Length: 142
View 1 (cartoon, rainbow, N blue to C red):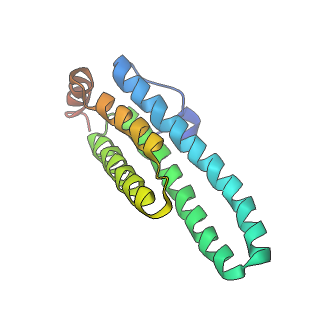
View 2: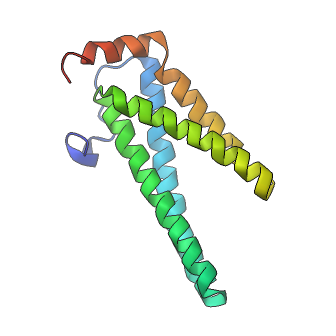
């Protein structure tokens, strides 16, 4: 759990601008993911009326999406605290979004390329030299 819980979501320490932008991208993405999952829960109720097995499958997918959005928020907040492992985990989230975009393009004809592009931009910002120096300053304290 982040220090101070989720109440400190928009309280930022002195961070390089690149890292601050990346943090906000991850937080806004996580919040939008939670919103989408809540809306998806309502869609699940409708699908239960038509096809209960499909409704159960959709419910499981929505719950996974909700958990991932919450994890993204938590990782972003841990990144803000200077934990380098959170930056690695968010980089892995970007790799997973690439995989989902490729699979979505092949299977459903759409994919989530905009989501991947936004994650990629946030990831690049996390690895720029000023951000790296900021994380290096936390290595002795963590």
